[in-house]
Length: 67
Image (tube, rainbow, N blue to C red; front, side, top):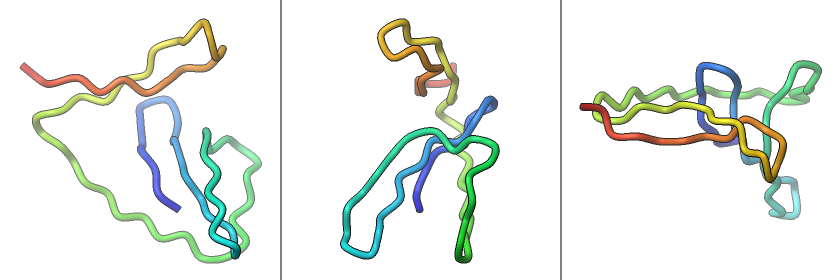
């Protein structure tokens, strides 16, 4: 599993045993059937925000440079 943590939710990508990759939002009720390891990195020069996307109907990740 790989993803991005934002103030509102987590964006993830996961792969199955055949190597197919799926992505989306990690939401309450998702079940991790094996171990999930988290490695968190803070980028002091970037700001991660979510903005509502009228096309998808979801809050989507926006990455901005910090001043």
